[in-house]
Amino acid sequence: MNLSTETGRPGEASRLPELTLNLPYRPPYDWQAILAFLARRTIPGLERIDGECYHRVFRVGEAVGSVSVKHVPADNALLASIRLPEAAALSGVTARLQRLFDLEADPEAICRGLGRDVTLAPLVASRPGLRVPGGWDPFEVAVRAILGQQVSVDAATRLAGRLVERLGERLADQTETGLDRLFPVPERFTFDEIKALGMPGARANALVGVASAYRERPQLFERRDLDDTVAHLCALPGIGAWTAHYIAMRGLQESDAFLPSDVALQRVLAEQGRRPTPRELLARAEAWRPWRAYAVMHLWHADAATTQANPQRE
Image (cartoon, rainbow, N blue to C red; front, top):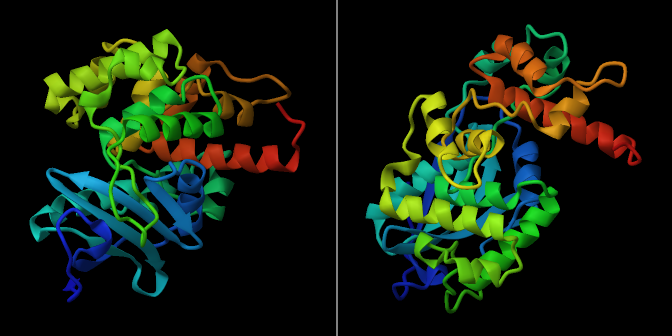
């Protein structure tokens, strides 16, 4: 880690000291896939992707900063340029980047585990470095997951953009990064504010419920046994099994989270025009443990490729 000589006033992420951090991973690493996944979900003002680089502004504790991340394949690492008012917050930022880019995954073990399945074997062989993109923090993933219920990725991203625009703290003097909004803190999630965005009442209640639960129980998103995690999350209003597993998969790095009711999974695994039921998918996925979340990613990629090749496909 190298500290640059550039300094500035506290609170101005574009003028703060810059820390350069190498974040290693176990190769192979499918940077293009993770970048494409994040690109479809970038929230204007909060994050952006320019070519081969991911940019974001953030708050960790009381520290507000910015980060830019690019791939350095020759080093088997990502290179993060981080601007922070204090180095003490660096460990929190590093942990978030490791989760966001799934840097602790063991692709060889994942490929061995999934490669025994006749359907997954060619998918794993073609993308052995595929990762499960995480989120900046579990609360943000939970909000995004609720916004994504029963709508397309593009629609959910638009809703997230409106939410951040209305409720996120605005940062001054961000001309260098072009990013000027922080993701909203839980305290900003009130029913009236959410409803003003045109959200259905049930979705507004779900967002307020998860924000309120997180305020009251900061340990809400601590890692537990997967079944316990899902049970805790499903006890909140408006959160069912799909949403709970999605939060576990992307927010808590739960490698065995699974989405048997996901339409894309059912579609890509259809045989002779018949889609498997959630119960049938669960039974089939038993052989994929403990890597079911990575199976989800491979199947999503396969479904996206088929859909692009046949736009008329449902």
